[in-house]
Length: 461
Image (cartoon, rainbow, N blue to C red; front, side, top):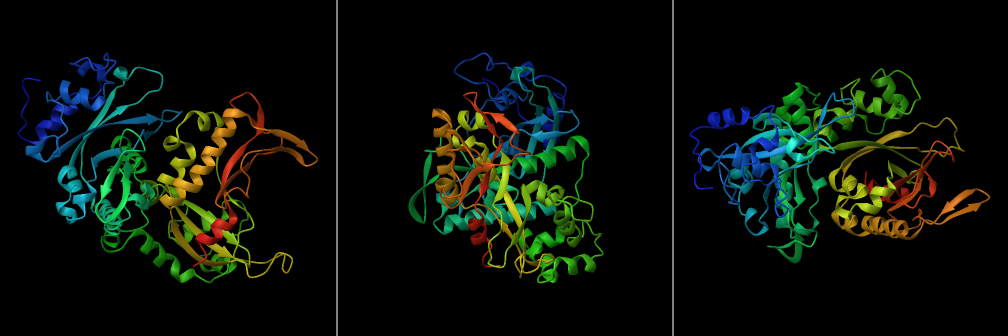
């Protein structure tokens, strides 16, 4: 591009961005990127050239350097009923230079230098239509609220501390709350040197989690606010984990019956009882914990664990139903099981029984403690990947289904597989089945974490 338009203010840039609202991506494709087979036509590049009249570059500085303003174009998906939006993906910011970033404080970091002010342009991603026909929805200057910025600073420090400890190769997206270090490169073999270890680390970039972007987009486009658990001033000095520990501390050691009386909790025995009880304990009565501001933005999922007197849960912990076609067709780092544990934190609220059910059929567990947990990267890349690869290989060949006196047995990895994770049925009944890629029918299956592994995670409470 021979001429680049110069902008004198952020307001001028935003005015141009807003002029595109309601228009289609293809209206700005001045260099025919959508038609080129060699260039996949990144929507951000199309907007930068066609709308803002600026050449695409890979400079380390912000896109509008004189204004300290970065441009990000990102997609939103609407739900089935067209009543709400979700982020299509995380918002990738800038590559992390392990050899340099640890030398700086947050205010001098590459993250803050490049992303202090972000012009975010949202477009609607619609399946089965050309990206040129995606409509541009909304443009906004993103600036962190005080509460969000406090959490982002804590997240940044977690990433830096791992680099300083020589553990850049162990960084995981689920280490942090809103700001993540996502893998970035042509493939998983894109590796970089780190300063305090000889072990190569995956190339990673700062990003805002898709869960954070979903909450942000819903607030901007739909004026949808969610209930926070903590006040901004609390987050200025303490992490979400420390604040959760404080909130639960007065209740540790109390039986579930004592807790119900303490907070005047209505007696019920449905599946949501523990979730409702925990919401009441946190002072957010009537709100699902997963839907609170901090949990929604950080993709924290709540799980109750009930330990037997020996410290081990009676049951394994279940997760999503398996889509076997995706398991076979999608690569490891885009797989259902990888996404779950790479991108999710879990709040384990742990109760323990002091008697066996045989000793006392009316036994009541007491609250032992809580743990904010994410699966370590080393476990993800070994035990979890082993499960994915084994199931993938079986699906490529054939799942063996064998009739036994107790039902139909299969050769998918069971609870004795690797001590961490396995596959087992989770269905309404034996007739509740799904189709495998080769046309076989199998009872609906779920991936699980072994109860012994769960016991190890919470053993120190």
